[in-house]
Every structure is written in structure tokens, then in C-alpha cells.
Length: 227
Image (cartoon, rainbow, N blue to C red):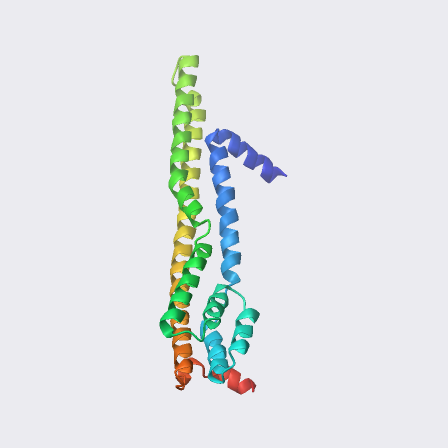
């Protein structure tokens, strides 16, 4: 209880700008948690997924490959299922279909990321706004009391420093997570592009009656051991 009382007093001391910074913080934390949960739900082993798909494509079991994608979690299996449903087309058509699926799912990867970027930009300005309000408050106190002793201006200066520090803190945290998610999105997007191209290659080999390169669907060592 005392913690919340101290936190409330901290907000009150910071002035009106602290309300804006608190709102930015709550929004940023909510988005970060949502994005972390989202990425944790993505398929973790694309190579193993491709091996499973390739082993079924090699024995002309496209429906079985589609079942594998439906049993797997994340966006990548859905994208690959989109290509499998067009598995009888030529390679260019399969590649185009997979590219469309990739572009449709790209928005899901970047959802709400712009909000974190915006918070990272505006938080220091909200803090600066609080700084200006604190200085104005300090000058009002000087004008009202008629002197400029440290005790008179301390409250206004404290308000200014609190909002400045809070604004910078929120901005730094937002930038860290913004860059983290950007890097993760880039990596995951590249992984999906590679997987989509490999699936298109496997379907092409299957359609022209050639053997699929074994390295694209050969079971992992752990799977061999288990069998």
C-alpha cells in the first residue's frame, strides 16, 4: 500500500505531463506483452517442418502434407499450406501464391509496432512539455513570493526534472523493444521466404517427376533415433 502511495505522490509531483507519460507506458507495456506472446506462438523449427512436408510430397501425399501444416502452430505453416493447395501448378504460379501469402501475413508481424515507435519519439517531448510547465510553475512561485530562494523554486525545478527523466526512460525502453521486434521480424520474414522457396522447389521437382533433393526432407538425427 505504501508503494502505491509513493507512486501516486511521484505522479502528482511530476505534474500533468506525468499522466501522458503513464498512459504511454501502459500502452507500450501492453503492446510489448502482446508481441512477445505472438512471437512465442510461431513455429520454432522451420527445417523440421520442411522435412515433414518433403517426406510426404515425395510419396505423393499432398493431403498428408496439408494436415501437417494444419497441425503446426504459427504463420509459416499457414503460408506453406497456401502453396500446397496449389501444388499442381507450375513453379512460377506456386511462387506467386506463396509471395501473396507472405505479404498478407507481413502485416501480422508488424501489428502495433508503429505505436511503440511513436511512443519512443513523443515520450521525450512529453517530458519536455512537463519541464516547461515546471519552469513556469517555478517562476510563478517566485513572482508570488517576491524572492528567488532555493526553497521557493525547488518544487518547480523538481517537477521539471521528474518529467524529463520519466520521458527519457519511457523513450529508451520503447526504442529497445522497437529495435528488438524489428530485428526479430526481419529474421522471421527471411526464414519464411527461404521456407516458401524451398517448398516451391520441392513441389516443382514433384510435378516434373524428379526426385526431391534428400537434404530438403531427410529426417533429423533425433527423429531417426526415435524411430
